[in-house]
Length: 363
Picture 1 (cartoon, rainbow, N blue to C red):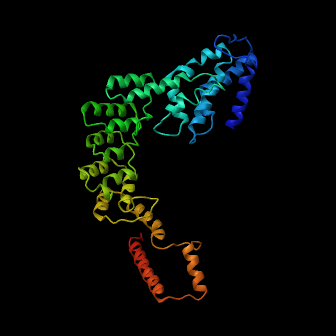
Picture 2 (cartoon, rainbow, N blue to C red; picture 1 turned 180 degrees about the vertical axis):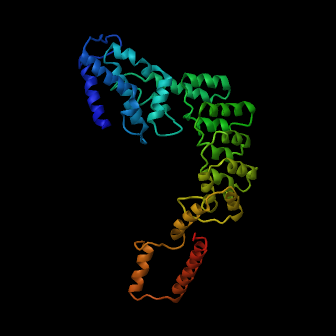
């Protein structure tokens, strides 16, 4: 539906141009006439340009296409005549407006749009012939947030002018919040980190980096803003290669105190399964008891464990290659006493599992 609407809008837009062969500039735009039909079309065009994020392709991995489409729509509508040009000046030039549009139509967080906002989609001479100055200004202001001498007042001023907090500088390995979280333990740097959180910076990509870099003060600060604690964060605390992490017990204690019920469940599962894509099983009973004391859902953990059991011991589906091979060989007369003994042992083991679960079954 959006694509059909966009085609109709573009038809309206280009039917407004003074001449199909004439180059349209701010100087030769024509005044509007008192025409009811124009007012109706103008309303539609302004709806399109003002809510451009609603009428471009859905969020996908090709953010360049999305930003390119947004820029073309804004400029195509702007250059219909003087009235629309003036009305949409904010859409073309204001960094705050550009920040809002870019945030809504890009699917990555943090946003590294420097090459998109200044080279490709915003400087296409074959189409619009103009740069999207609002986005360029947004990019420039956002880059200044990486200044090592940045103060809290400067941060607030840059943000008020249109700088983007969910941002990653082209020359940096970290998004803005992580950059300031890991810079140092100096009070000034920690204050910038805290101010970013206060202004609303997305904090769900920073937690594990803070833990891995042993930034206990920053961890205490970010937990006040209730970031999502996922498997990677739990792993940063008690994964085997982090056993020598200083303050390990304090990190775990802080996460346990701030975790939601769902996050505690995730942590309990992570105690025995560190990677949901790779079904490797570990046994850490002391660690699991800490989660159970915080009322993590042991029933959810049991369900997860039994779901990956077939893939870690033996397959349980008839169409699985293991089962098909075994039945095929047996149907053709295969027999091996050791194989039979192994399967009987597995059967007894499964019976033990079943009995252990059944004794807790509600009556």
